Length: 481
Image (cartoon, rainbow, N blue to C red; front, side, top):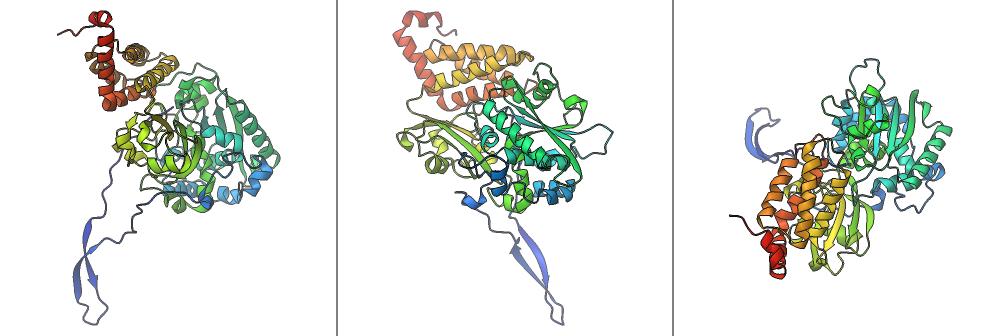
């Protein structure tokens, strides 16, 4: 499930007036204008070198079980990391600048620190969101299928940072192979003494459980996921109270994405500063990108944050089918993020801040590429239909509004609509956005907004063509002045 975090602004590089004193016997002060001492800013991002990759078995070319994981460096010095304590782990994660990889992009170190309050006797829990129901997103399943020990080790490290008693990995019901591999990895970790009582010999007790969902997209929202774990209908809760206060089983809980948790051990081993050296400020680290649609070689790849969209597609996905000039538009962060046209794709960077500037979002970094053979109106209508089907029906704006948007969008696919209905559906999307308990309503509204923002002439042309070819039908929907 995807939601957007607030954007922040940063101002730096200002000139400062300082007074320098020499070491001469006279001690006379020298006044001068100097530029603040700053490390030169990085302006080139990507490609990521192999030695900097965290997910080294992303394509399943090596053994995914414990023996292979140990050879690749998993579980290395995990005991030392755990013994350094929660404050040290949290500090490294904060220094790294890691932001949530599930869509919202909230600073991970800050989120995990919310759990470090004086104990009131209730156990604390880590819940890992492995539901991954966002259309176009296929990163977490690769981790669980080919590198499950990275996730299990990440659970231990993250759990230690927040003082959690156990982790519940909520995995999508359709992910049979992934859940099977993950369960085998957990069993191996228990047998090796890496989790359970006295995990890694650190004196820290920590259990890991796998919970399988039933395939509902809404359960990707953290409170709906918690409800599902408790055996209830997967419907989002009102907040506050937030999960950090009252979460699963009424206990303090942090819900985190698979990728976010899986990178924690590497950050602790290599240092937060190492992770922060990738990408732009506030957009640091490496990231798994899913590239699908009209590219020559669709793939999931780990790359540096802030790499340009064009370089990402041409370096790893073989470029757009038919060449870059054949590109129509890209959905950069999963189905719930607004589409951007080719003119924006030319120079946009794949990070949180630059995509917000381009009036879209990084989301889960699921890049869906559309070439000029795409009926873009039909493509967005299909996404709206998906959100209509997956709405839990709890909030009236989402339940009723997305249904109306779906009805209008399919008429717009044929052109059987009035031009004024384009403005109507825009206003309808604004009435849904921000007026629901969870972000599903926002996720349904944003694709429509992106379509109207960048492809309104295409929609108007479709309506005109329908009027020309079906004058009697069009007469029924003639403009009302």
